[in-house]
Length: 367
Ligand SMILES: Nc1nc2c(ncn2[C@@H]2O[C@H](COP(=O)(O)OP(=O)(O)O)[C@@H](O)[C@H]2O)c(=O)[nH]1
Ligand SMILES: [Mg+2]
Image (cartoon, rainbow, N blue to C red; front, side, top):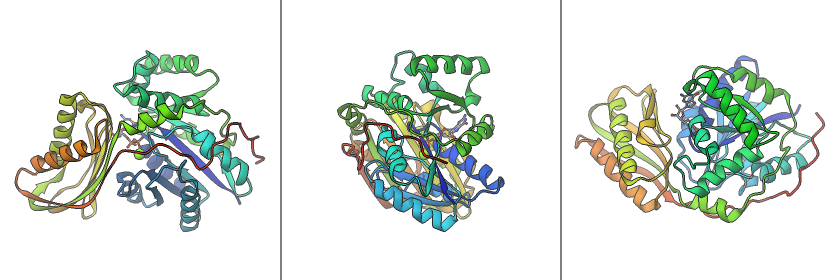
């Protein structure tokens, strides 16, 4: 029996991982076996640790994006397919990646149609960013990063407007209409992973349809490379030890401190995400733009030790980003917590150099 692969792209912070979590639970309750695949430029990804807590098998491709490490994606698919005996795999590419139709979907259709059914390429977009992009703005992003976001929608089979709970039904309808005008022929849907609205409809679509990669965007790799290179990238893990600490308050101090610093500097935040784990308890914190996007979910309780994993993608030199994170973690510790770094990767993504790049659409697979 063929395994189904669902690719969920979309810019940093669009809501991909939250959707993967929800989708995995719902597919499991439909009796399907699910495996998840995450992807990042470096190891120690919050998303992987978070998704693995859901009891689902997860494989991580790190060190390079799927497009530039196609074999890494294939290996992860085999590994998680075997481990989960999976009927369905859901893969989340790096949020600053585009051109997935040409570099992932077409080669899969071309060479793996015997073992794989590939679902329509879903691309998630945050409605607040989308509104500004459709108004001709950059949603606070570097123009080349905003270019990536637009290309992601241009190549999508299905644009999924996420976080629909943040808008009224009429605002959503108007966004969908404008999206259809800006990207003619693209299918659109809306989802709230928070309330569950639209989730089953999206799952029905991606688990039954198999016409992926119907379009290929014309991507200028110089602009694409610049859009990625302007982001400082930090994946860090720390051990925190000290007095009894209420970790949710610590996370709030830390994210507020970071949001404040980035807002004061006027730099654009792609995503800052952290996880604090203390025993079986954990929390996830996020900034997906300015300081007022701060959100924390879960409870990490009160204890003397915890593990902090922090992933940040912010428009600045990686060393500057690293320095700010060190300082703000120390300030949030208020002199009561000893912070020991366990892992530290600070980089700026290199020029994308895909393993494959098709310039034409491969005819659709027979089911
Ligand atoms: N209001 C709302 N927030 C959401 C929803 N889905 C995700 N988020 C938030 O968006 C942020 C980024 O989510 P995440 O899934 O990590 O995005 P990713 O970077 O695309 O994987 C987090 O703060 C989530 O809590 C949603 O349906 N509604
Ligand atoms: Mg994610």
